Length: 597
Ligand code: ADP
Ligand code: ZN
Image 1 (cartoon, rainbow, N blue to C red):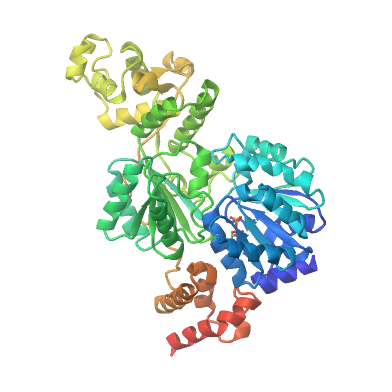
Image 2: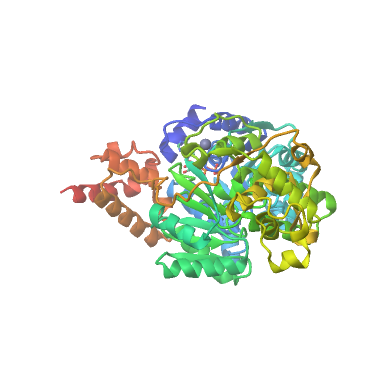
């Protein structure tokens, strides 16, 4: 283990292991298999990189993310690690050279896409080489239950038969119990030692606001809190990503669209710019982001509701991987629910699947309407306990007021029932308010006893009541009736007055308050910071790698705080190992020195 610690300090420049990195490394070094579930940014990569360097032979990393291999390998080479990748972007000459390197034992780590790995040619190649381990990254792709299923991953169970003496580690950040089980079964990992680490991402601030004027709300959010930060904006439709990106461009933001319908070159280019520039906002459908390994994403904004809490967790999890403050911001409204229900109904899946998705969507909706800590609820969803009050989500920062909604709920449920359980919210509100709209007259709803019984509340207030009734499962938006509301079994006690319900008061818009901080502390010297960033950018450009591959924000920030004045002091900064000290120490010290004089 001493050897592992020396590598951590000398090569990676970090003083100590995070839990359970040490144990995972120990397991692999001793030839055992491991399953590692750890939240994004937790530090999974070291867990196979270090054992691959300690054990004889080359470590094979299976990753579905061809687009990222180049940067991952570039980052390792910066540290002096002999890494390479094999994928379809290489010429046959390059492939031959890498294969020779592998046979001759000149590689510490080799990244391979799953579809290439399972070709017989590759397997034959691997049999002629000495291998230290297999690391199966994004292992949830083996689960049919999850949303990133890849058929090639199923074939990976052949590894343990073809290479019984090579230890394997499967890694993922998503794992509800069922996905976890499928990983173990499909990858034959029953004897693997499992390590499960917390899902909490304390540096992410969770905020959800009622959707009123989404574009404008987004604009205010960006202007006030993230005027020049990298971030991701998620939308449901391709068109909306393009429209929103165009709108943000007009407003002076460096925004780019990304969705599966764009030509491959444009997608690749936009992704490249997002990774290599510092202030690009990607406006994307969920086609973007799986495994996006950019550590300095400062915000993830949702203009539409994700379908499940797992998806929400994963998408927001792309923010703040470097551990600095980041914001997960979302606007949502009832139209999201109706839209998602209709989409779900239009999908091919069988009834069982739809039912499961329906339950998941309801959970997501309930999450939006919470009056208690969002982080606590999020962690509870993943069976993890947490303090009741995290202090870094909107409901903790601005406690939500509640009111006894029993009577309002009864009125609302009665209107759904009396009108035949097939009308949408706006019509139901008209009936409650006693409005003689065309539709009300057409269906004679002005003749009903419930007509006009809700005049004590505003339209908005009634909309909020219906939304919260659906979120709490007392009513459903029925896709077969174009999103019209129907009652559920659950509402019975409420309707009969046998139970009571509390509603949240919709908070007033708080756009003016600045809730989250940019990663830079207020008292930092901006001149020095910018000079260091410019130096980093120049180095990155000359080598064709993203800036964070040179040094990440945290290293730069510590540089400004500590102002090292010698190479020895510089070597103490987090993320400065022997190789980077030698390559960059002098240059950065010079920049620090110049800005001071
Ligand atoms: P994951 O793959 O789990 O999302 P990474 O392996 O990319 O996370 O690590 C996230 C960040 O944490 C990286 O910048 C990495 O260098 C850093 N890191 C990992 N382990 C340590 C450690 N023991 N001490 C300090 N920083 C670490
Ligand atoms: Zn909280």
